[in-house]
Length: 64
Image (cartoon, rainbow, N blue to C red; front, side, top):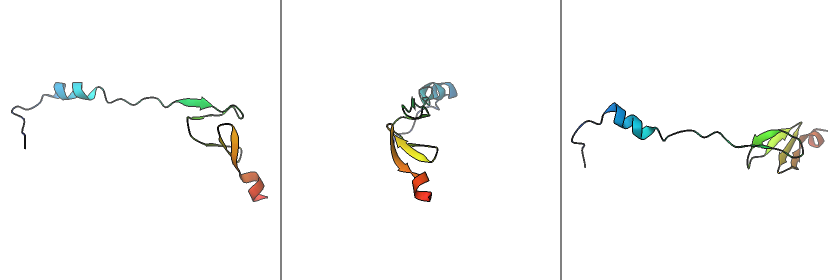
């Protein structure tokens, strides 16, 4: 196995790690409810599960 000939300095290691950054998640606004949500994710609003402006699950009807 390869071994480093010299110890890598803290500065050099930190320079390499500067590229590891978190990006802000993209937020979309649902056209029907106006609620913000993550892209490509279903979201709940007032007891209903919405995806791409359509109701997938309606808990209000199931409970009654």
